[in-house]
Length: 419
Image (tube, rainbow, N blue to C red; front, side, top):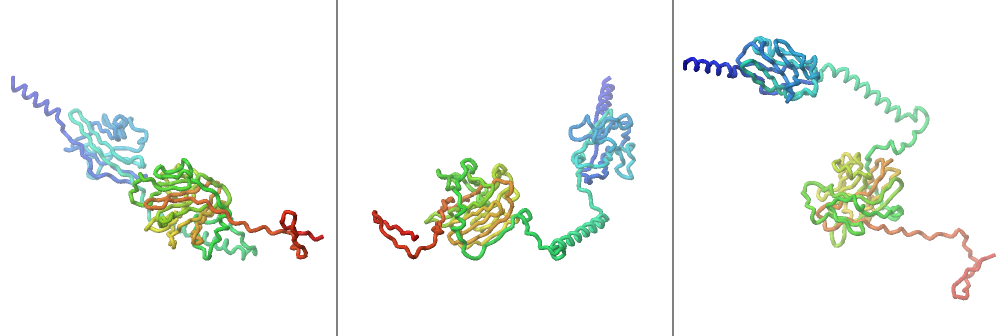
């Protein structure tokens, strides 16, 4: 009796033990968009899989399979995105297919969404197991045959463009008419004009002077601003990482401009301290401060000249232009010519033009931009420009040589008009 019980228990253990393993490749399978790929999967030791349940599925979509084989045929239970794209196939020419335990998946018309993990699941009455295959989608290769028509197309376009450029350049010789001057909209963006020779008439610039103050709200919290809102410096609590210029220390002007010429001056040295080594001065589109993650480029609405200590002076044009400004400016003049699309900088004490950036402001509200940098003893201070001295107004009356000056009763002189 005891031997019969032991025999039954051994048979039960044999029947319920796992009798096969699902095997898949360790490395990912790579294929390009639009192609067909085979995802290998087989049963070890090899056995006839025709009576098994075979299920290919993605991630946790077990009930919504890529392919479902049961009762010796593929069932109509499938993710819609894989309809008419999947089948069971042979992993190699030597494979015997399902009879030898090959349950590999054929996947056609690959898309970018097909990238990722595919699970191969096999189940029988006495055993089950699964494996994971990773599919990597790559860009489709470019056939060398495609380069020939592409090359000739590009060559023809280049020749046509060259002919058009020549005809445009010499059109006045062909038509007998002089070419019209280019309007502002045709000027290249971010054109840079460097130092102009000769002394600059600062008094003429100051005729366009405007009073500039720091905006009450649009200021970096790491900056200290004076009560009259014309001086700004980094706060004592601000700790700079020391890596690169601290662009986050922005301060916008309270004044906005949509036309005309506007001039202001900024002090970069407060005696007896030496001139500042770190500063950033320019203009920006009103609202640029709301896009803090964007880079400070003209395409994002910023135009400025920056002094970055040992890294020198540079503009934020694309690409940036480095400048050699000697001596270091102690007082900087800024002229915004909105209508002509120009932003100019001047060394006021040396009466020198430093550079002009040409762009287009049309349709934008422009505000002054300041950044005092970190590490200088002197703050950045916006100055009140002195009013230019107006020349005396000459009288339109002719000079009277035959008149005499006679004193009146109060002792003042009165000119006698000639009749």
